[in-house]
Image (cartoon, rainbow, N blue to C red; front, top):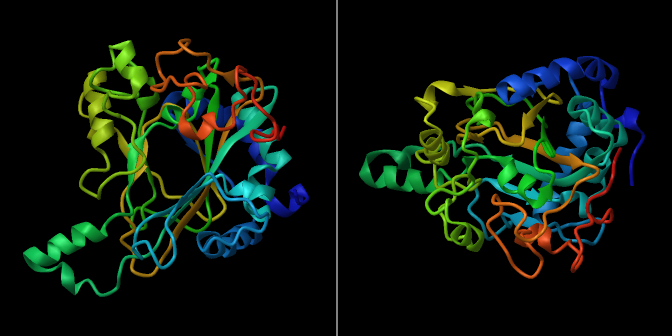
Length: 340
C-alpha cells in the first residue's frame, strides 16, 4: 500500500534538522509552520486528483471512509467538503498519511518512541461563485449568508481525538498539509496563539462541572468543527477564552498562509478554525494527519472528565468506539496502524 518514501516527501532531512525548532514553537505558540516543502508537488497533484473521485464515492479499496460530508448531486455546490479516514478507502491517501518517514518526523517533533495514525481528514473548500449579484440587497444578503457554509468552526482537536485515549497530555498532534497555495483569501487556517495553554481545559461549557451531565453529553460544546457561517465560526473559541479569563482573544488570532506541499504542526489543545474561501477561482484543499502516541490506550470508563460519552464501550465516542474491542482498552493496530 505504501509507496517509497522518496516519492512522497520532498525534504525529510531538512525537517528532521528542524524538529527541535518545530517542537519549541509548538510548545510556545501552539502551532509551527514548516520551513521547507514537505510533500512533493507530484504528491500534491496525485492527492488533488483523488478528491473528486472520493467525493463521488469511488473508493479503490472498496471500503467506505468513517465520515463523508458532501455528496455530488445532493449537497450544495459551494459547501465545504470533508472526508475522515480516507486512508481506509484510497491507496493514494494511505501512501501519504501512513508513510513511515512522515511518522519518523512526527516522532522526532513530539519525542515519541512510536507513532500511530488516529485519523486523517480531507478538507476541500471550492471557490466562491463568480456571479455574486444575488448577494446585493436584503434578499441577496440572506441568500449569500446561506451560501457561505464553507467555514470551519474554531475547535480543539483534543475534543475529538485526545479525549479518547490515555495518558492525555501530549498524546496527539496534527499535521496540516497544503495541497495548493493557501492564503487568507482562500480560507487558510487561523490560530488563537497560545490558546493551548488556556485553563481550565474544558471541551464542554454549560454543565461541564457536573460529571453526570458532561458524560451524558448534555453540556454545550465549546469545541465545534462545523460552524454555521462566516459570522459565527469563532464563537466557540470566544466562549473558551471567556472561561479562561485570557483577555480579548481576537487579538491572539493569526491567519497562517501555507505554500503547496508545506505543512503546519499544531498542538492538540490549540483553538483553530478558518473563514470562507472568498476566491472566485482558487480551490482550497488540504490533507490532514492526526497522529497519536504508539503506546496509548483507550480511556477507561470513569477515568477521565474530558470525554462526554459513557456507553457500553466506556467513554469512547461514536466514531472511535466502533473500533474498540469490548471490555478492552487496547488500541487495535488494524484500525490505528503504527506507522513508525
